[in-house]
Image (cartoon, rainbow, N blue to C red):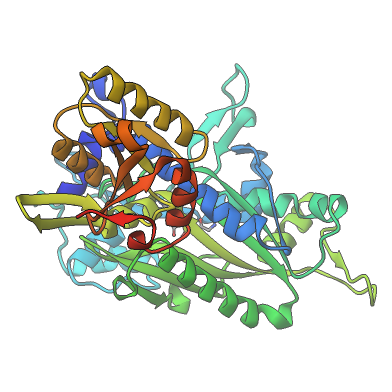
Length: 461
Ligand code: GAP
C-alpha cells in the first residue's frame, strides 16, 4: 500500500487534499492522471450497465434532498455507528471496530450488548485508556439551506446515491416507455461522517458511488439477484482484478441493513485484509413503500397487460468508485526484473490506462525529429489520450510511461525522416515493432481492440 501511495503521489494520480495547508485528514484529491483513471472507470461502467442495456436508464440527482427523504428511507433513525471516546485523549473510535480487533464477533449485536461486552472484557482504547459509554452517532453530514440556521432549514448531504432513484421512480415511468423489469443507474458523490476513515482512499468521508436500483416483480427477485451477482463478477474481471483476490461474503441476517433481506458483499483482498469492495442487496419493496407512505404519492406500478397495481421489489448492485480504483491500482502494480535493472509497471487493462499513447522524438534538440514527433502527436490526439514526452533519455521515458501504465510508446528517429516509419513499443512485453506512419491510426485501433502486438508490424527487438 505504501508503494501505491508513493507512486500515485509522485506521478500525480492521487494527492493529499488541501496539501498547502498541511492537508485535511483523510481527504484526497485526484490529480491529472487520477482524474483520467476515475473518468475511464465511470464511463466504462456507464457504457456497460446503462448505454449497452435496453433495460436501464440513468439519472443525475441532487446531492441535497428534502429531509423527508432521509426520514422515510430510515437514514435519520438507522444510519448510526456506535461511538466511544478515549477519556484521556478524547480520540473517537467505533466500538464495533475495537471489539472486533479484540476478537469479539459483533455480528448482530445491539449497542446495549456491545456496551456489556466492552465491560466484560475490560476494553481499553488503543492508547490503553478508559473509554466512555457508547452512544449512537448518525453519519449524515448536516448543513443548512439558505442564510438562517434553524432546525427547519437543516438538510443533509446524501449518504448514498440510491434514494434519488426511488424518489424519481414514478417520473421515470411517466417520462420513458420503460417497463418492468428495469433499472435506474446513478453515479456521483456520497458523504458519510465516518468515525474512523482511513486506509488511503478505502474509507473516506466523501466518495463516489456507482449504483443501480433494479425494479422487478417480487416472485423474480432471486433470479435478478443471481444475474446481478454474476454481472458484478464479470465487471471485476473486466477491471483486471484477479478472481483469487475476490470472495463473496453472505451477510448474516442479524447484520443486514434495515432495508435488506439479503446482502452479499463482494470482498477484495486489500493489503489490510479481505474487505468490502461492492455490495449487492435485495431491498424488497422497502424504499418505494416507505416513500409512498411518507409522501402520500402512489408509487405503484401498473402492469400494462393485466392492469394489476403493485409495488415493485428492488435488487441493488452498489459499487464504490474509489475502492474500484484502489483495487485496480493494487492489481496493476508490478516490480519486474529487466535486462539492465528493474522496472515498476502498472499493467492496467488498456481501457483503464489514463494515457494510451506516448510520442517521443529520439532527440529533443533536433528540430526535424521534434517537428515530426509533434505531427504524429497531433494526428493521434483526437483519437487516443496521448502525451508528448521529450524529457531525458529514451530509457527513462519508457520507465516513466511504464510507471503510469501507458500501453504504447511511439519513438520518432532518424529513419522516420527517411522512410516514414516509427518504432512502437509495447508496455507489457517491451517488444518493439516498426510501423508505417500512414497506417499508424489503423495499427492503434487494432492494438487497442486486442490484436497481437507482433502481428501489427515488423518486429525489431
Ligand atoms: N446504497 C447502498 C449503499 O450505499 P454501502 O455498502 O453502504 O451500500 C456501497 O455502500 C459501496 O460504497 C461500498 O460497497 C463501497 O464500495 C462504497 N463505500 C461505502 N462507504 C465508503 C466510504 N466511506 N469510502 C469509500 N467508499 C465507500
